[in-house]
Image 1 (cartoon, one colour):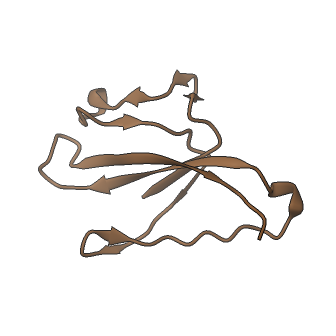
Image 2 (cartoon, one colour; image 1 turned 90 degrees about the horizontal axis):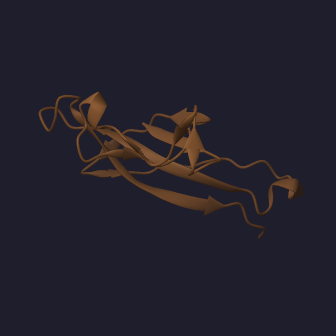
Length: 93
């Protein structure tokens, strides 16, 4: 499950990064706000997700952040881990 947001400093009244230890995921943190999510299936430990960005010049330069929630049964109480986060910028081509 991928999470996408426009902030890497706060979300839902919480400062980011937010430790997820209290949710059964010690050592994991939420690094991005969650304005949208997308489900993607992987094969062999790799997932590919393609995003369609509208052809709108007003979006050039918009920054957003992404992070993945990865199910891993038995690794912790939640049975999942979080990936590192990435920052993305919409560009012109």
